Length: 135
Image (cartoon, rainbow, N blue to C red; front, side):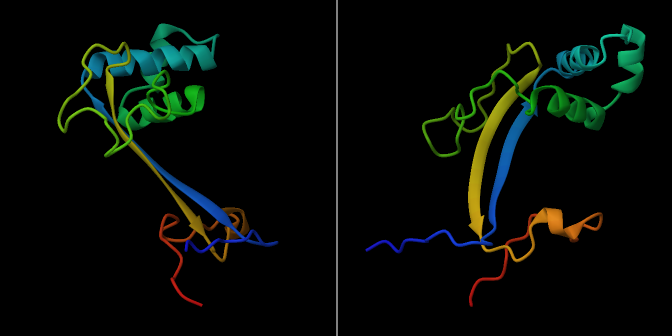
C-alpha cells in the first residue's frame, strides 16, 4: 500500500526543475536573445541590444526574463527524459532561436526546514541540496 503524505500547516514544498537546451546555432541564439532584449526594452537600438547581450549568461538571463524559459515555444512536456523523447544525441537543428530542447526533469521535495524566502539576502551555499532524510 502506498503511504500518503497529508499536507500540514508550515510544510514546505519545493519543486526543483532542470531544463536543458543545446546551442545548435550560436548566431541564432544570440540574435534571439537580442530580439528578446528589444522586446523588453522597446526604446533600445540594435547596437544597444548587441552591447547588452554579449555572451551566454547575458542571453540566458534575457530569455528567462522575457519568456520564463530558454526555449520559449517548446511545450513544457516536450522532452521529458526517458519518456518517448528523441534518441540520445539527436538535436533539433531548425529552430529560430538556435536551441535544441534537450530534456526536462522535476522533483518534488517536502520538508525543507527553511524556505528560500526565510534566508533573506544570504542564501545557503547550495540552495538545491536536498534536506536530510529521517526524523
